Amino acid sequence: MTRITPVPGRAALLACLLAAGAGSALAADEPSSPYVTPQADVDVTYTIYPPHDTRQTMSQRMRWSASRMMQRVDPANATTYMITDYHAGTLTVVNADQKIRTVIPAPGAANVQMGQRAQGTWLRTGVSKVAGLPCALWQTQDTDQRPSEICYTDDGVMLEVIRDGKVMVEATSVNHTPQDAGVFEIPSGLKELRAAHP
Image (cartoon, rainbow, N blue to C red; front, side, top):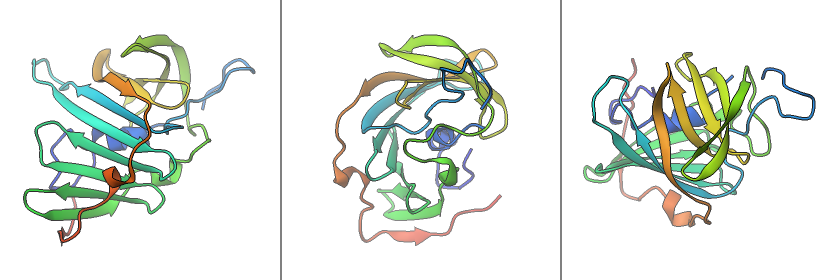
């Protein structure tokens, strides 16, 4: 979704989905939209499924620091990873092997706020359980403006994304543990590359 050359096709998916969405009414005592920003530090491993029918899947690890408003996404078996700083409004793609970095504006940074529920059109459709945790199912549009159903915990952790009836992203483990500052530090001495534009 994020269109920059150094990022593998699905590697930017989680960074974009964190800012996905667009509220619709429920009963007066229920929220009309979810938190889409984790409200506490968390470490989540996801399985990402391809849009077509193959057995190929990809694993990604997402770590979030609530106090720093920073996210790190590490695709499995890759030396490229992403660090998003929502205070600064930047997404940095780090290629450790080539010792390069690419910095672009963070997708949806203006909509990622602690303690605030998502804006836009959301419809709660039910509840589910993913990775052993309960979550609420919400219909909305993803960052490509396609209808999706996303399952969020009450504290804003995304556990599942369903599009066209097919699971696209699914959490396999969730650990609510404090995240060390070093996880989100950009290594020094990297050469900066300009992002490719579509």
